[in-house]
Image (cartoon, rainbow, N blue to C red; front, top):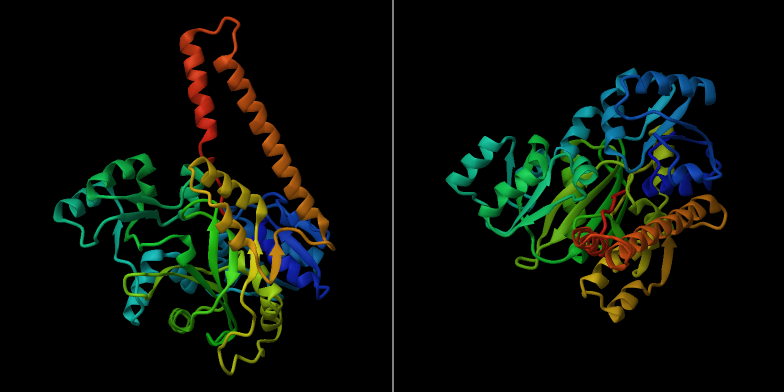
Length: 428
């Protein structure tokens, strides 16, 4: 059973379908993953539903003869709900994720940083703010962190859904209160962090699959190349390796006692050349398809380990795949490139160089499973048609004749200009 309907979840479908594993999806709606021909059925239940665990148990009993292995793809809310309700899962159900305590330690960004710092990892300076009064008090006393600041919500998925961003940069302390108010107080749990210099291409992911003892069964590293916008979802990644980041990731995950799939993100700081911990994602991410293209079948490895618990750990951790293997999500990449074009930041030569690789995985396209790719194309065409129609109507209202008042035409002109700006994007 795969929880989630995103590209991350589809990575697990890519993997497990190769081994004829019967696949079932749990998601509020089919999304991209639900269009796969390998998905036998879909259980529609929200992660916040109080009867999530009973419904999962009943569905496994009816559809899968009482036995299932659970994966979480791209949804932190499903991960939290399942980890918290893990004791209530039926006997024949096996999880590929740890208990609620370990999940909390990777979901709580401030706690993750504290644990990392305690074992000697480099982390950005971080202040946690839980109220407007605490913010005012901290600013009056003077933040120990040097500007510019990166403001993030503990619940980054909610910030993205409600405000269209995952992080906001403030150049000075005086800018923080207005930003705090404009983003609903970051829902009562704000993290103010030191902004590490450099672009998205300095972000690297260390992906590990760990057994019950915290020993690595597989390790993969990639680097972000492009994203939709700063702090948002990645659109192009390439294979990489950083021995220091790998070592730090494995020490941190073992300290947390994590099991299953974990994606540890670092940013390489140009000032001291050290990888600085950004966050940990404790469920399947976009990178699992990338690893599969490089010969590392992470979901199937998790599946076997969940069933037997006897998968041998790595004797040595080293790179076993070539450079310049690219993971590419063209639908979102076109949006990001469009933003750069409007901002006059697009460099065609650089885009071409970045996109040339020795091998590719292009999401969500697969000859043997055309449904997700066709669905993605339909969404792109539909979105373009809707956007073009809206722009045309506003253009006519702004510049056409026929009884429009000057004030009405001016408002329409502003709406046209708004449509030319960067759109609200979503993360996986």
